[in-house]
Image (cartoon, rainbow, N blue to C red; front, side, top):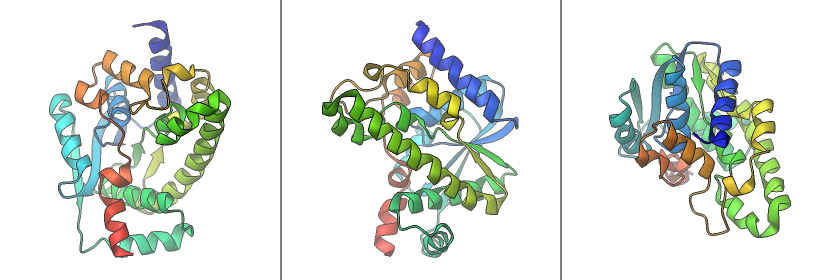
Length: 251
């Protein structure tokens, strides 16, 4: 493995070791490259992992997570959201987190279900891959910022990180009602500092780059993440689970 991939690999493992002290953990899992990479690394580090996938029946995340895990064969549990029970959840969450930010509400709804699934399995710690999209140019906003050069990309990154760190506090407030703690090792200060030193060209190639996160995808491929996951374009949790689509219908 090239030195830059080895360094990234070591930094991720180091962040996990420092952040995740429980050996029995759930991992919020969509089958995408970020959550699959974290799952593979945690499993190889001898954590007792269970993949946790939520979504409406036949949603992208449920189907894709099952497809990817056919190759990994890790313990995997799926919670299908019941349409009849769904409408009460967004209103309760909106009342608790007290913001009209749609993304925050959708993520809190998603992690409400992840935490509910974890609790049903006796899991109190759930690890997520949050931070990769922010730090490695996973979002479309980075394509739009590309023409503004590195300073513009870094400006977007700082704003995205600030939002994500605040949002995950709201997510944990919701998860705590189930006795579950959501951990994001890749949003630790040390990992953020390291990731900001990774050259932009290892993250995004130009304003037309639909895949991005190239160093992450390459590392994932190097350590045996299924290729179908490594090459999959991003689909955010609220879209892949059909929560966004259903929430708009209930408004």
